[in-house]
Each structure stands twice: as C-alpha cells, then as structure tokens.
Figure 1 (cartoon, one colour):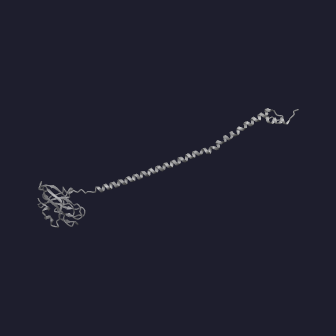
Figure 2 (cartoon, rainbow, N blue to C red):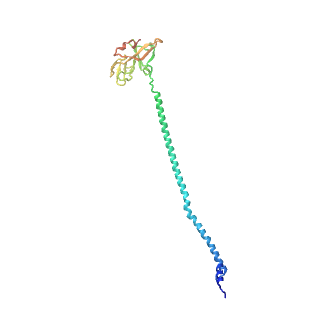
Figure 3 (cartoon, rainbow, N blue to C red):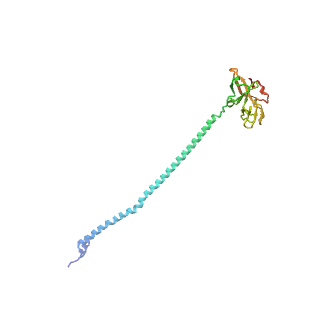
Length: 235
C-alpha cells in the first residue's frame, strides 16, 4: 500500500509523473508538446508569401506606369522636333523668297531690242521692182526699190500694230489681223487702216558705201515727209 503524502504529490507534479502513471508516459507528452510548438510558426511563415503577392505586384505596376510616362515624353519630344523642323523649313523658304525678291529688284527687266540703225548692203543688192524681205524678221523692215528710189518700209500696220506680210503673187502687203492692204509703195488701199505705212531714214554710209537704215527716224506720207531726202536714196 502506497502512502501518498503532499510532498510526494508535489514532486510528481514537478517531474511530470502522475499518480498511477509511469515517468515514460510523461516524457512522451512533453515531446509531443515541444514538436507541436514549431509547427505553428512554420505555418505562419508559409502563409506569409501568399499574403505578400499583392505587394510584389506593385513594383510591376510602377514600372508599367514609368514606361508609359516615358513613352508619352518620347512622343512629346518627337512632336516638338517635328514642329521645329517644319518651322525651320518655313523660315528658310521665307528667307529664300525675300532674297530672291531682293535680287530681282537689284536686277530689273531689261528689254533687249535689235539696234535701230543697221546696214543692209550695197545699193546694187536691191534691183528695181523688188521687195527685199531678208531683214523683216530681224529688223522689221522691207527694203523696196521702186521708180528709181530705194526706201525702207517699217513692217508695222498703221491700224493696230500687227506685222503685215508681203504677198508676191498679189503684189501687195497684207495685214493678217484685220485685212488691211498696202501697195508696194506702202500706200493703203483696203481694210480699216487709216494711213499708209511709215518709212525709216535711209542713207549710204560714206565709210564703206553700204546702205544704212535708221528706224529711230520715221517719215509719214500724210505729213508730206516721204519727199524728205533722208526718206530714200537714188537707185
């Protein structure tokens, strides 16, 4: 018969022994309790990464936002340089136009006309009754030898200034614009022209004996100027 005293019960509680139980059973219980304690922190540690996933997504979102902002800045810079290029081209074109206008002002139009005085050859080169058209295109005159006189008719219609043509078959000058007609002498006879053709000054050069025509001096039939000695030369 076991005598259980208060001292023995307290000792058993301290050592983990219970009345009627062995000490090995008490040791197993302690070991199970000790093994169970680390399990809870491990479970908590394993649960933390799952809870931390949303936090890991934040840097990616920030990178996307930064990349988007960088792309917008790049587009803004490209737009700026594009407009700058357009403005520079416009400025260059404007400066070029100003320079061209200035240069055009410094070099005005100059009308180059054939000389009013020129030589046409010797008097023997113009036979009687012939209208010489060799100088019409270049100098705008006909050299005519008629009735012992050589004279120069100015090839401008006295109606509206068109250039008439010599029609050999019809023996007349005919204006293609309004049908004015002139005899070989230059006197008008048909069409709307109000007066005969004008004659130019003509003389023989004392230097070489060639015939010289000077269109700067003109003679009109209606003013009686065809009889002026400078209006013809003897054939």
